[in-house]
Image 1 (cartoon, rainbow, N blue to C red):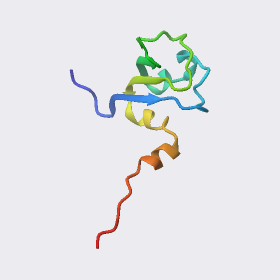
Image 2 (image 1 turned 90 degrees about the vertical axis):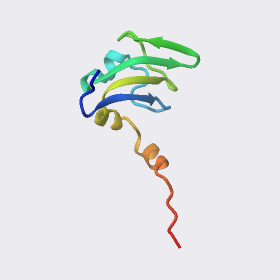
Image 3 (image 1 turned 30 degrees about the vertical axis):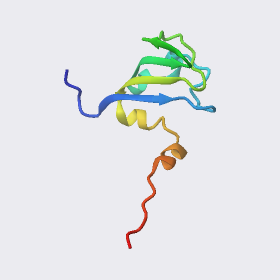
Image 4 (image 1 turned 120 degrees about the vertical axis):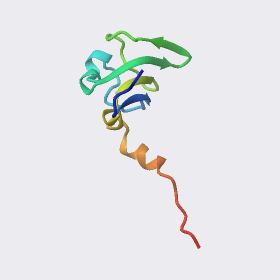
Length: 91
């Protein structure tokens, strides 16, 4: 299987305060961003091919396929900053 450039699989975790919380997958607008949810992980529960009516909750992990750039826009800036490696100057 060949994947077009710019598309891939990624796991998104929904933190407290996410604008997606309380919305169904259909209402979330992910499909409009060219993001398809393959699997939803909720605690110890695994929900493959979740229905569009499934309502999102804090802590949900979404295994998604879609535009990588669209998925990057869903990561809060603070999280991106926290992931930046600290680089010490060389002597």
